Length: 167
Image: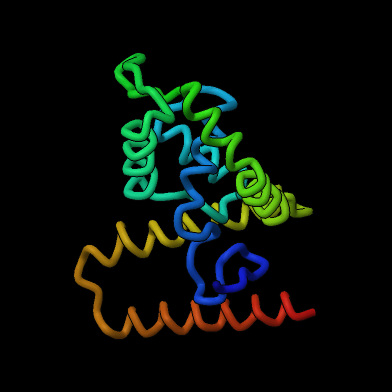
């Protein structure tokens, strides 16, 4: 097993949850209130102050697994598939309460950060930059000189950020 760092990623730099833990997180959210998939994604992004937003490719298969296992039921509401926990799902969580509580504690440790407003705003800027790079410019032909200049700016910014974080 790998250790997790302060950002919630394991020592290999991956997601904040270990394999198989996302189902407990999602089931816990649905136990609080029925939700649709996009709402689950936004809730996790909000609670992590922008550090973690699971992809639809992680959430929807997990919801399907939970539904097939009988832990959640789905109903159509305003054109969206809304998931609610079943009695079987509540038993499933209760039987694994120690594991589920450990994951919740880990999430709280990661996401109970001070200055979360600033942190959230900073993560919003990262996402804006990523969208700019991906959608607006890299889809077009960009010459090598511009790519080098962008890489230099990003490299310089990363170095400055590293220095700030090491203070």
